Structure formats: structure tokens, C-alpha cells
Image (cartoon, rainbow, N blue to C red; front, top):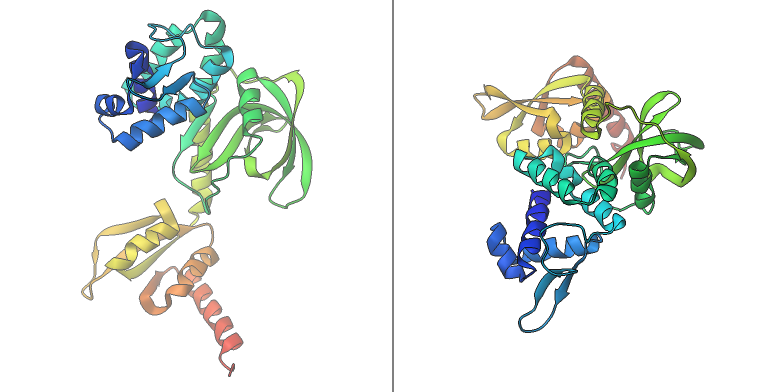
Amino acid sequence: MRADRLVAGLLYLQSRGTVTAAELAEELEVSLATARRDLEAMSAAGIPVYAQPGRGGGWSLVGGARTDLTGLTAPEAQALFLLLGPAASGSDRTRSALRKLLRALPRTLREDAEAAADATVVDPVRWGERDRRSPETLKVLQNAVVRRTELRLTYAGRSGQPGERLVHPWGLVDKDGTWYLLAGTERGRRTFRVDRMLGVEPTGRPAERPDDFTVAAAWEEVVEEMERRRSRTWATVLADAGSVPVLRSHFGRHCHVEAGGEGGDGRVRVRLAAPTPLDIARNLAGWGSAVEVVGPRSVRDELARIGAELTGRYADLP
């Protein structure tokens, strides 16, 4: 996991003072290119790591070798834990390393670092199309989560009509490149897509957050609810085994090959899910006869309707 390596790399830099990318690669058991990317990621995130070119050079922490992190400024500590915070949901070893890093910080920086480490979750499983853009408002949102500052959002919801909302930012989630804000509102907890935010303005007023709130637990609830909505309709289909990887790319975790479901013709039985029968039919219409829908009837009816529409539109064209 990338965050595990960044923690280990930072501690290795502290203990050695100056290291080459090759030395770091050997220590972490990764490729030279990966070690260089990790060092550059730390530097880009605001961690005081810099490269010394030339013979005898390498990568160093500003201030030389240290056994603690007291040389970090408040913004640097915040940047570090925003970068590494997602690792808190990883292995026991990673969580232990983060706790040690927190204890090494001066008391004046520890509270913000803990808030930053808890401000972000990374969920690698995508919903729909990817959006790899890094929103310009992300830093404002991260700072508001850490500082617990109320925000005024100009937000375009599903209808596309923008409106203003006052929110108490609780945490951010990176879901395969698309960012979401978990926030408290007058109607309770809500989830906002960052790329739908047309404006973000701190009000200067303090934000409230439940004492028992954690970003990871709240996001699990959001995912469970979303998955329930996305799997309201299930269909059983027969498909060639070679088509299964493509079906998985379309339906993601809602594509299951039935155990022992191979038929005499070499096709396999696959279970697919989507919000409605029409959603499944639209995804399968382009397969023609390569995929046979066994049931339910509602999906077969939607496929028949789509086929009839296409025939009526294109059958008489020259």
C-alpha cells in the first residue's frame, strides 16, 4: 500500500539523514522508479524533503537526521497526515506507525495532525465514469475539515439547478479519483460530490461534529446504501466465459458467476444487478445474441422494446 511505504520512507529518512533513491528502494523492497515517485510525492505534499544532486548526494529531510518530528511546521504536519491518513484503515503495522508519528509531534501540532489523519478516506472502487481531476476547492475543503470551519456551498444537485447550502464539513473521501464531502446539515448527514461544487466559502463560524463520528465508518454506511440502490434489480444471463471480464468491467461488484453454472454449450450463468430493468437492458443491448437473458421477464421485455425501437428506426434506411 502506498501510504505504508510513505510512512516507512519518512522514518528511514529520519534515521539516515540522507539516502539515495536506490537505498530507499532496497529498504522498502520496491523498484527504483517507485522509490523516486514516493520521494517526489512527499516533497509535493509539502513535507520538508529535498534532493541533493551530484556525487555523494541524495534525498534529505530539512534540518538533517533527527529522531523526532519537531522540525515540522503546522502546515507541514497537516500536509503529512492528509497524505497518510487513508492508511489508518490499512494494516495494524500502518496504524502503529501513524500513532508513533503522532506521538513524535510537538503537542501544539498533534491535534491538527490527528484531525488531518482522520479527514480523508480512499475508496478505490469506482461508481460510473472516472473523474481524475483534482478539484481546485479540495484544499479549502481539507482545511475546513481539519479546522472544523462551517462552509457555504454553491452546489448543483442532480437536477443541475444550483443552490446555496450551509454545511459542517466532517470528512473527505477519494473514490477512485472522484471526491466526496461528508458533512452535517440541518437535515442531518449528507454526501456532496466535490466536482458539483460551484463555490466554496468558509463562513468563519465553527463547525460541529459528533464526538463518535469517524469518516471510515460513515463512508461504509454511504457505500452500503448506494450499493442497495444500485442492486435493486438482478438478472441471470448466459454468456461465453470470455465475455465475463467485459461484463465485470460494466457491472463491477454486481457481476457474479454462479458456482457450477456452466452449461452444456460452454456458456456460464452470470448474475448481474443494476437499479432498474432498463439499466440492465441498456448495458446488454449492444451484445446482441452473444448474451442471453434467462430472467427476469422485465429485463427481457426492456430488451425487446429496445430492439423494436432500433428496428423501427433503421430497418428501412437505404
